[in-house]
Image (cartoon, rainbow, N blue to C red; front, side):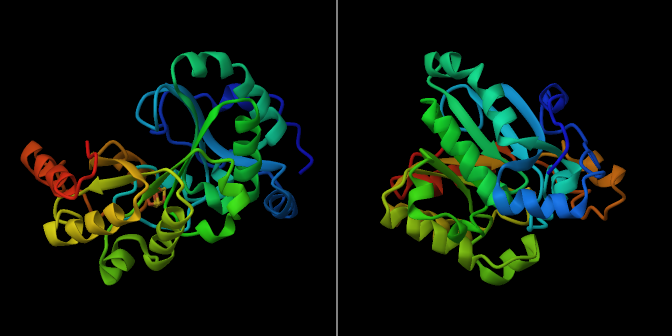
Length: 281
Ligand code: SF4
């Protein structure tokens, strides 16, 4: 990667990941993209926010990577699917940006979260950035769909204090319909985190009509309870804040008529997790 990204950090700043961002890295030559992925010295970020209280423990700085291999029907950020929609940023630049926040993050019992898109699409960059944050004494969290978890070595996992793992559904066929991908690698990654005793939070997006089957949720709940490392379950109610992105991108959005879950459905779902001894919220 040859581009000078010294101006990237301010451009990256976003109030929320719901800002539509496209083609920001479009001019980057394909060969440079390949080099970035191979070395991990450079990555593509969709946006960067500070002060988040919903992306891990405490108050967090969050960087959202671009690039995702899933195609979730209910994705809030379809503009993160394409890597070159993001801004190319070097590990050095991102680390320097993070350094500014390290004292504040400690005071607020927070840390750094790498989310996406899917951060492990750029696993070398992800590992370098998380390791750099950890070496500054910053608590590190990786928010992932887990599909590419086998790209991380056990030693890589040592630089990650917490994995927030999204399990979309238990049923293999349904997972394929919802995301376009197999669920098995995600479950395998979860088993590995359990075997390695790595702290994990489960993130579960609750979509009426798609992911609200109590039997399916119970299967996930029993599975993650058995791992012995799940500190918390976040039940995340589906919302329509990303709908406009599907429209702007000219993509076929199939959830036009789907409403957010009722409080009763949310409570019932949380209860399924709690019934297995999990700390669900
Ligand atoms: S894994 Fe996340 S970023 Fe990727 S398509 Fe699904 S919801 Fe969107």
